[in-house]
Length: 127
Image (cartoon, rainbow, N blue to C red):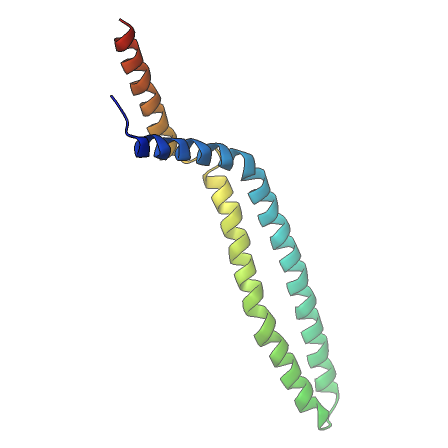
């Protein structure tokens, strides 16, 4: 079985992708876990800050309390979507690393079948 140049390039790309995933799986996993930890710590910090500001507002009864409430609402509206997006990104990194820990199974099977087919054709050509 003869492969065209484009097919050979596709096979080489698949092999490089499999090797690259093996190299970067630990990086993906660590980045996801550390990112989730940092985002979690910053989220808890923002939450504690907002709660303390709201408790201060409840103890005060002057005009500035309304602006403090607006400031807290602005902080929540600005940071919480970013925190959720960060958590989803970190969860995706960890999930992708774990699902494809040994490489994509379909691509691995395809490469094994191609290697077998190439060995068969080389064996037939020699005999």
